[in-house]
Amino acid sequence: MGSKMTSQKGRRTMFWGMSFRTLIVTLVLIFAIIAIYQLKVLTSLDPTDVRQEVSAATRDFKGHDVCRLFNNMSNINRIIVQHEFAGFRNVSRDELVGNLVPNIVYYVWCENATFEFKHYLSVLSAWKILQPDMIEFHYFGEIRFGHYNDWFNRLVRTIPSFHAMRAPSNWDGEELGCDPWLGLALVDDRGGIYVSANTIIADSLFKYRKRDLTVILQGRNSTNEISILIGKSHNSRHNSSIDSLVRYYQALPRISNFCDFSGHNLPGHKTFACVAIPDSTILYPEDYFTVNSSFGNLVRTLMYGNPAPRIPLKSQSAVPKIVHYTWFGSQHMTFMMYLSMLSTLYIVNPEKVYIHCDGYLHGTYYDKILKDKRVVFVYREKPGYIYTHRLLYSQHRSDIVRGDVLLKYGGIYLDWDVLWLRPIDDLIQSGYDAIANFDHMRHAQYPNTINLGVFLAKPRSAFLKRWQDALVDYKSDDFLYNAVLLPYKVYENFPETLYIERRLQVMCFHLKCHPAFHPNFHDFSEAQEFDWRKDVYAIHFTFPDPHEYDNVTSLMNGKGMFADIGRYVLQFADKLPK
Image (cartoon, rainbow, N blue to C red):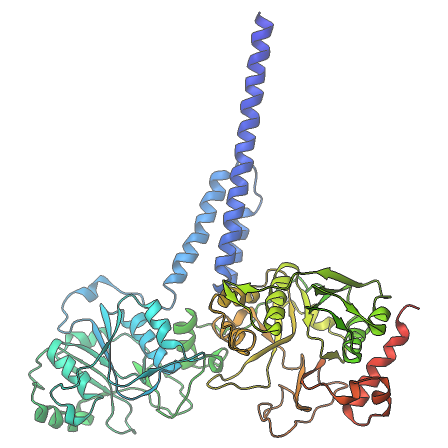
């Protein structure tokens, strides 16, 4: 009896011991999953901070250190929360008392015009630096936006206290015009801060809220344009009489402060509380990714939450040396496709070449290519939808598969109309998470676009994930948007996730080539010169393919650069297994 009880007790002890170990392992797995998820969330944050915290959380981990792991993981949560407030000025509770001016910001929009990045920065600066109780955007004209200039919609989705409202058509003083007069009238009526939509706030205006009235003009050498007006309601120094407003406005230069108004240089000196952007100046985020100036620091702080230059990140891992093609439907392999495969197999020299296809390729050239055992056919059903959006173009199906395959496995994707000209081992080993090139096409208001016809990426690339997530707004009827315009918007928002290699591919449209490293590569009217033997890694014939690549005879009889390139690639056919 005693031995039986002892045996049962031993089994119970063993059971509880195993259960405790199982519990520990389960908790560790849960924390690991949480950490992985959080790392994905953190792809847009400062990677140095994140990696340090994750490293600290998992360094020398022992199975019984669950509490320590939990505490360290909370540091990652802290970074996430801190990022939500990145770029905001630190405020003190002292700002709550002694103010004559309420913390309300007014904007006035008068014309039928596009709401640009500079206007976005203006409102963003008011939100993050002034941290007002509310931001009112009064508009008379049409607020225009589109694929690129979606800045106004971003404000609506981002700022809880942002409210756009149509301005009254018959306010007192309408004969004077719209801006700044409606702004002055709003301040006079309710008190607050009027900010011109071309003005970017660079420093706190807190001290001015303790005064009856403060006016900040565009600049000492500019016209008497008001950038900022801060005042209490029914101010004794300018009453509701329009005549009084006019007289007061004429006296402004003698009693005003000034913004920096430096034209196109825009240094944004720290001695100024604001920067006034000229109407003729167009700002783009990419112009300030790395520019070393106070204004550049301000733009990055507002846009990305950190004044540090936005440069692509590197790690020690390499891009997998595998190549992906896609094809849907049955197709006789053309001579152009054959040349592309030859250049891939013997210039890039990958470990594998995967052809993702729902039908099959056939023909003499395909039979020759299949003799190289590195070529692998992968069945892939043709996608029909993305985030419930119907795919209308075959090229869009390729876009969807390209992103999915590279996100899972990494590697090198290229279109069938691309020929490699030199090895890419230096790019593969560069450490960048993803590598692409600007497109030669400039579209509407976009400063640049991105062509993913040649694209290198590591598995789980942050850029790829951001692009895939952004396809929730896929546009079925827009041929260019999803894989040319949208990738640029992702790059603009997360520039540290993608390295732009301007020599990755030169694109040729209507047989005129436009290397992205050339200053005039957006000029469609003229081809730009380059040396194909040393200037670029690949050449991409977006439309049409050169007639020299119709067949072997055309190539051997051809003259000029395209024929030279084709014959250079064709010589590698001798390397195919017999």
